[in-house]
Image 1 (cartoon, rainbow, N blue to C red):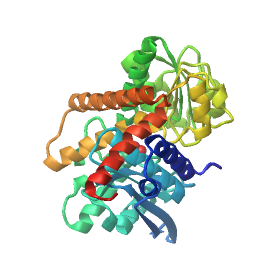
Image 2: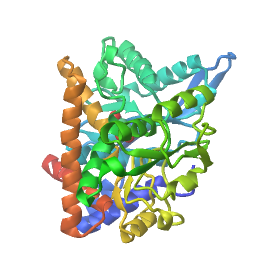
Image 3: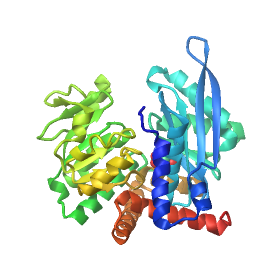
Length: 415
Ligand code: GLU
């Protein structure tokens, strides 16, 4: 995936935060390590009749504040260290949004693009057969992430329910609405991110109806971000990309036309009336708002100095390395750090858990209103902490989140 080890990055970020908060060595040690991990090897029958072995993980990083929560990724280059890092980020994300949840993450090393639908279903069900004793509505609640979908969540919830012998909607979030999903979960990650961009623009005195936006990635987060930029603020999206490359048009691109083109051709590239650009070029475009919405470690010490955007909204998890962070701060780029910017997904997942547990559904308007309140409160707590300590927004987000986790560990008597 990349030469940078994401878990080392996550630990470096915790160390920096621990220095600011002057944490005791024993507290630091807990925060630097996952509490539990499960490694599974799962044989799955392929369509050709041969059973193939898949490797998967589930990591529960810290559950001081409540049951672990976090997605499951299907990725060919998945590693345990990536899952560890992501589970740490989930811990801080849930704490920052003040959700009564800890952090977890799962992953299976596989390429879903090379699996038939039947194979994908068998892999999903086999993963649950392997991890079901480790998860549960009060223990650890998975959700969608990179290359996993509501359909996959349905199979997983169904498999878990069959094993335990009762309907257990609350074991997983991001489900379709007809089987316990929440209104507003589909675009929650992007929508939550857009609410934080709106707050950042207000803070910087930027008129959102008059900005240009570039978005890296056109999956769930990237596509909805492109759509909502226009819908919520009337902003102009001038560039988008996916793993195959990017497109640019200074007049603006239409999110729905790109979406249809991607469904038809498998990629956003080669869209008529748009110039082809690389993923690297997209990041360095002269735009007001840059949204990395794909994978980790794309903004590094190599390209950070070339970032021209005023607001960097990290919809992806871990797109910026610590060295790059310093350069961005020196250059005055307003970074909305990942575990704040993309927290809308888990926030509506939490709403989904609440609705599942009292078996009553909220409408979309209610979800949007509650999401907006949560994102706005979290953004401003980070901003005020950043001003109070004179530190960048990521460090400030860490300070707010880690303080809350430490407080819970103290209350429980762990430290
Ligand atoms: N995968 C999303 C994230 O990284 C959502 C997690 C969840 O809903 O539990 O935040």
